[in-house]
Length: 229
Image (cartoon, rainbow, N blue to C red):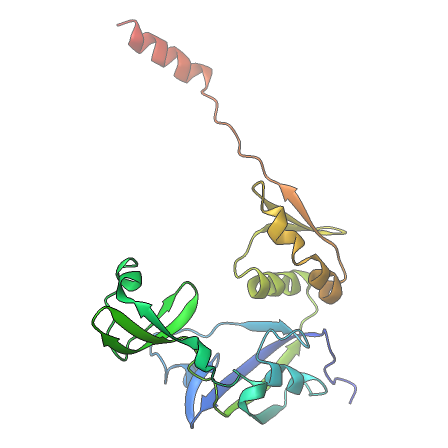
């Protein structure tokens, strides 16, 4: 297979994930609308073998052909993990109130970047489940690799979106230069080795100093004139 996908190839995916026969994630418009009528599909570009998608899905991409639709079934170990009883916690209700949340049994919401489901509320205590809702479940994916991505800018922005979770100010030369405030270099340096592995270029930091605003001579003259009145 001359067009078979290999580890570290960047590819664009069209996919839908199912749990118990129901869609839980998709970037295919017709499937996505079963979750939310107003949702818009998001372009998904990943580097194969870097677990930018769940582990079993990532493994399944290697050796596949561009343009062909596939179906895979994954157990919990290859997807969102087994349920962990240690992630079911009893928390004082005041912790939620401090975040302006009034917890009720059955509610689900995000706290400190973690999805939480409230199991019970009893007096001043809340029993909350921090397990991923899909943990312990068998899931299925249908997917198509629509193209192999060759554009360097697309690759770099895919890596930033996955690792940084936002798009920094950057420049591509013989290195990938990330610009930001003092102290941001610690964050950038944490990903240097990974960027080198998948993109073949050094990731470096360049401090971006804030420009000091200077009043124009015209503004100064106007101010002085106002003061002299």
